[in-house]
Image 1: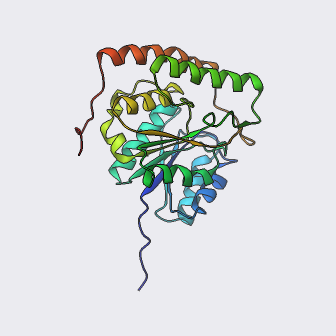
Image 2 (image 1 turned 90 degrees about the vertical axis):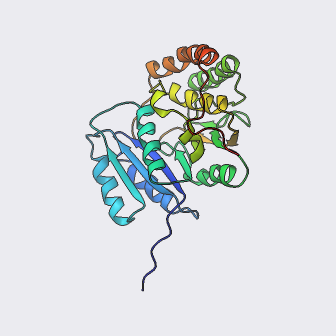
Length: 255
């Protein structure tokens, strides 16, 4: 009598668009970790065959690799919102965001998991800036822009998080259940700021875990000046709205 594999308590959401060079390798890297993480890929109709690669991996790792295909590029924020809702519906306790291009080291998923599952954090952020500037192969101009943008966000919002635009994050399920995901406004990198700021306003504990961020080797970056501009100019609106419309937990206070 064969034993059914134990269901994982963790799922890693990885948005993909034209990631055929990285899709198989990033999935294999997550599957090889000592803790069992499932993977949910959100593919925005990549013309390079990314979805087919993910489907092949789903056959290799039954019940651990999942795919949602969307009709086109609908934005990073909406991809994660789709993934969050799916993860909540499927009962995962720890829900992760990660890039597909190995800029986030899959081994660091274990650090984020420990911070939330064992060390008392509600949100764990894989931080480039909590212990200096840990970025590899970025042009200096981009490093400075990102670093000082995070400083600006801290000043405006009052958050203590040093890497406010980080896209390598673990959420306890309760956090996402208590955020009104349908009212998250931003779609680009400002989405990352809005999620952290909303978590803070709801009283959740955010911990930063130091990581080394490595610029992608394969594939094309999705960063643009418009996405970065949204992050900068949207912050004041977030702060302004928080004065008059402070969010409340969707499921009420616990404890």
